Image 1 (cartoon, rainbow, N blue to C red):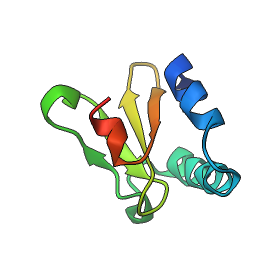
Image 2: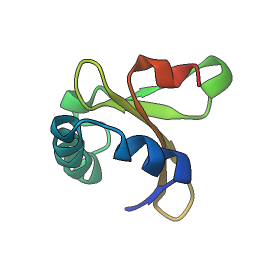
Image 3: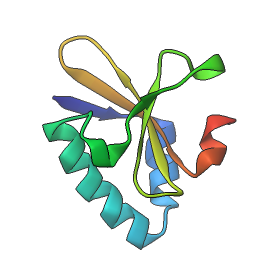
Image 4: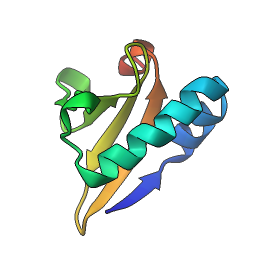
Length: 86
């Protein structure tokens, strides 16, 4: 699996607290092994974000992503639930 980080994702990631960044790195490793592993709470999004999915870093933080062709995954956004409305 190839993960591509959007410019928006990279900018948001840089602003995260260090503790969340470290946890996000652990969760990404789990995601690479199995995107639907139960601890990630991966779910499809609806409404204006239909076609995208998200997984949990912790109770508060999420990563919005999209499955693409050729085993590519695009990480589009990271943050609290507020990312669903941005």
